[in-house]
Length: 313
Figure 1: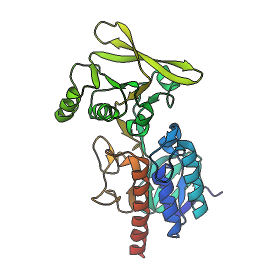
Figure 2: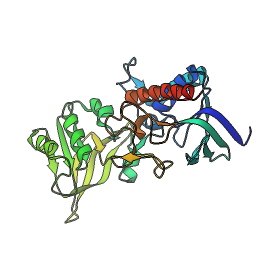
Figure 3: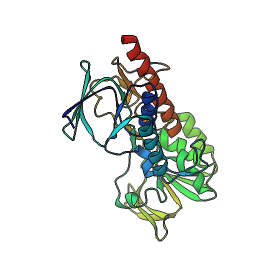
Figure 4: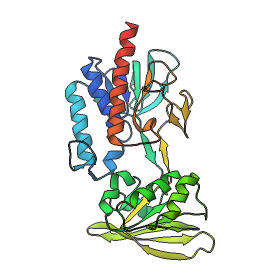
């Protein structure tokens, strides 16, 4: 393999947006190269059952991503297990440096690096991720019908998830370090009026409790932020809702961003502030953050790349 690879279309990232962009880019005869990144398959590889992907009543997240990868490859996308460590968008062809030592040059780029849920960093939190600990109420709330669950956080994300989870749970305990929510007032008012939600002020998550076989959450230990007192709350699910962080490290200094670092795109478009660079999926989406919307944006980005390159010719 040459130390330098040129392609008409370079796709950076391998979640639903990246693989869908690969499928459409291949169909447009752009012969795209897709560099998978540090987490091939993206956030769906850390989930178990997915029940909101159209056409599958239920599918395992990792299995769905394997199928998407295979589809993109079958269409003609060249998929490379590499990590882009540096990206030069100052001139065309654009230049991307791979951790493998390969330099990629491209006439157009689709960024699909996604976003990462913010976590607390507890060992017990990591242990039960996917087994009762989640960062996506829309993805996993359905599994807690009639159960007691807890939500960690106090901003818009936490309040929105707590309200959504009342559709399934018998009780939602919102655990917050302070005694006042940071969310929009209309959301806070809605939460305080909901009889299923009980706020627990001046507390933080100390430890997630659970069983080993089968692995699952049975409760949490919480710590009072003023007194240090430890108490236990029984629950079957823990939703960490302290926000998401877009994986924007490659472009934070070169592309226009908004809403806390999400890449800004033009209205009704995936075009970014640099002509020839397009962005799709959770890297740009601070609102929906769903696999199906990410895939749709991957489709949009590839179609826009096709038109962009055709216009130049």
